[in-house]
Image 1: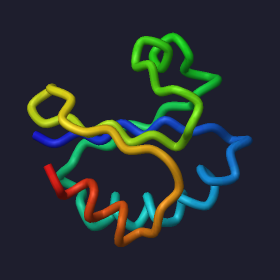
Image 2: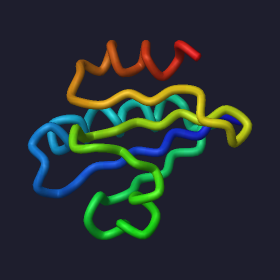
Image 3: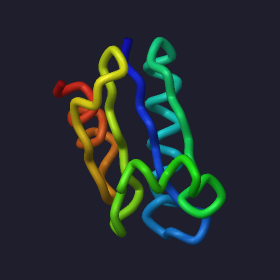
Image 4: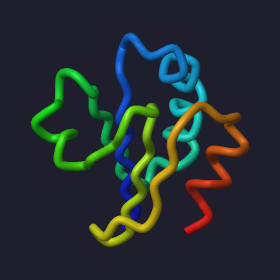
Length: 86
């Protein structure tokens, strides 16, 4: 089972830009588990993930094992390609 954890923040311009792209991918891949975390509000969950300073961060899990991590703003096609390349 694929799970995508997205770490973003309301003050992050790149995160705001990515919202529509992420929404479209959530609709295209409803079978994936999508988890949205706020860098500031969910710090108790986010801190152990060690996401760094570049957000948004997409952490991809396959069967509860982290298999890939990508960060930053990108086109919807590039993001979809990254999420599927596991």
